[in-house]
Amino acid sequence: NLNLLIYVLDKPWKLFVFYNINHDH
Image 1 (cartoon, rainbow, N blue to C red):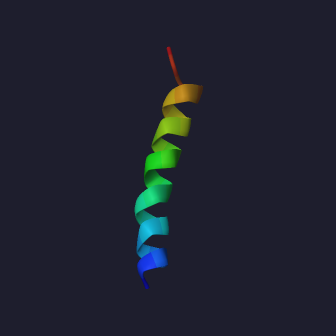
Image 2 (cartoon, one colour):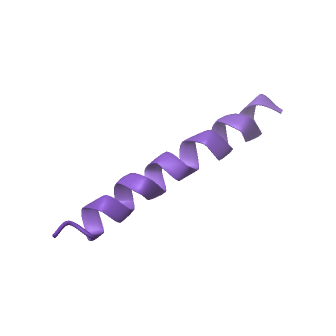
Image 3 (tube, rainbow, N blue to C red):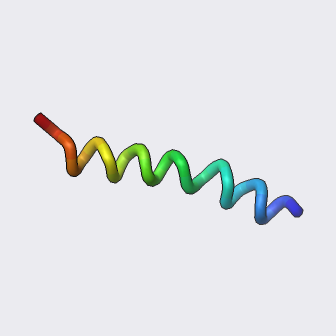
């Protein structure tokens, strides 16, 4: 399922950005 693949690839990137924004020292 292409949509599932896109979701799986897209989510870590958003979590990574979210983490960096919230842990900016």
